[in-house]
Image (cartoon, rainbow, N blue to C red; front, side):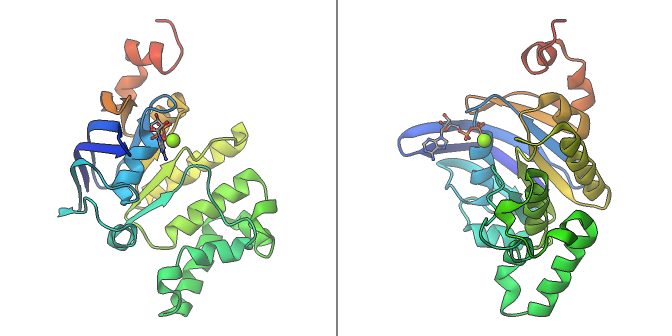
Length: 238
Ligand SMILES: Nc1ncnc2c1ncn2[C@@H]1O[C@H](COP(=O)(O)OP(=O)(O)O)[C@@H](O)[C@H]1O
Ligand SMILES: [Mg+2]
């Protein structure tokens, strides 16, 4: 579904990604782990078109999307839950959901509203929070609103950038259950996560990125037992 080939990216003159190769097959949950500053968010931004790659290619469903505008990439079926959620704090939870459908809102308001209502079936907790300013709801509720907003465009591939950051452990469980459920229903997922153990548990395959390069890749179940991964990412001495 997604093929990232020798992707390179820079901020100004500072090269941050040095030839990333990764693939996501339809139906998979693929995780990207790696330490702070490794280039995980930059990889997602380069896929989404927020950052123009300096080299390499991104293909989605067989089409080159390298350097396409973000709106075009979203139309093709990729959505992102960005790092830090980035909900609109002064808009209500309901308005935040609608924002995910803004590209269609003026053309087909009814469809956008129906889709937002579907998001409430998915996240029933949000029903009681609809009219509340999103900046005042709990971190977990904000994350649900952010996931719901991303799903408004009916993506085929959902990318999540450290969705569990700052969430209590039981909320993290809840979020991973939701991600696994969505995957069961056919959504393909690319998950950036610093909590390596949780990422390996929830995903089918994992890539570890360090200083802009893939250093480890494999089936997540295998990596859970890999001595290098255990030592470097899981903090276990083997
Ligand atoms: N907007 C930016 N301008 C300049 N450098 C940046 C910017 N964003 C990230 N970087 C740098 O790029 C590198 C990779 O960052 P990032 O992709 O955010 O890492 P990660 O998401 O893995 O923590 C880091 O060294 C970071 O300091
Ligand atoms: Mg990041």
